[in-house]
Length: 175
Image 1 (cartoon, one colour):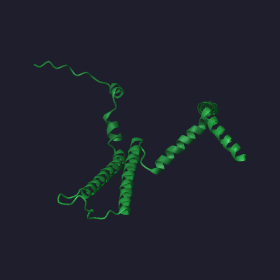
Image 2 (cartoon, one colour; image 1 turned 180 degrees about the vertical axis):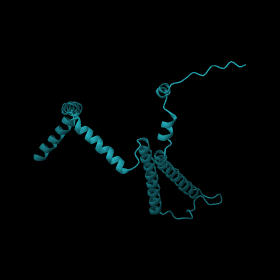
Image 3 (cartoon, rainbow, N blue to C red; image 1 turned 180 degrees about the horizontal axis):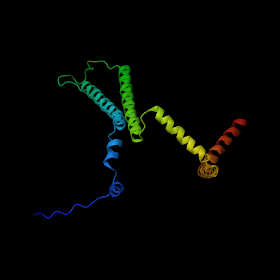
Image 4 (cartoon, helix red, strand yellow; image 1 turned 90 degrees about the vertical axis):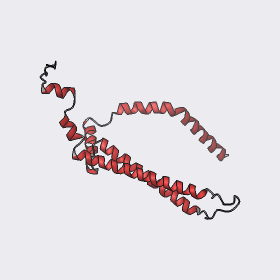
């Protein structure tokens, strides 16, 4: 007979206190809402991948066009005339695609991380935060005044120097 330890009885309280239950993980992280949000993030990541691919392709195409052929004379003009407007438009187009795709990926990833599935839900959260702040009594005026004093002490010398230069310039103009 093998020496197997006897199974210990576990209580439901002990398992929930030690680690999250599999039901919570399967409903929260693998639920349809989270999958939809994650699919939007994957859409943004796919757009970034495609924009990187198109950027690389354009750069390689431009590099290949700039390398002279083996049999071409070194002092000869290139076969194709370079159109600077076309080059600038293509560079702007590629940069715009890269920025927009990265912004889409970051926005969708942030929404997924904060568990927001739409604009209306985001508005509702912001409104509830504003209401909570109003219930607590708004902003702390004393703390705001302390922060303002610290800011003035920090920037005071440089602001005085700047205002002194402005006064000197005004005096010279008056003469």
